Image (cartoon, rainbow, N blue to C red; front, side, top):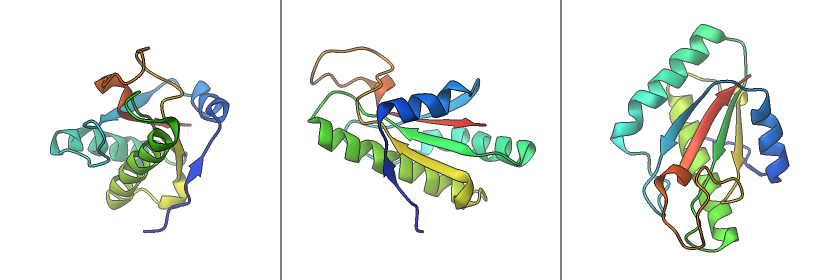
Length: 129
């Protein structure tokens, strides 16, 4: 499946999400871009939301905690966002309606120090507009 990936400046991801009042979160294990089975319900909810609210764009924005360097975390956040976009596409959301963003550890949900493994930061947020 061919997704166009973009590492975006943090302000772009913030602007994209600023208009959105609703979002869903998919969490990941440390260092992983593998979606665990316990996250399936969140993906199902996102797909149902898309079908009920069509037409709109879903923004799939990946994040990372502070373990590792900034470049690795940006790459990991893009892999996470891509995994979620692929899972949403498999649930019937057209790939052209998914905007995939990587934030690395530039927009932490929980402000931590360096090299802190924090679940809330290892997340892909799915929002829509």
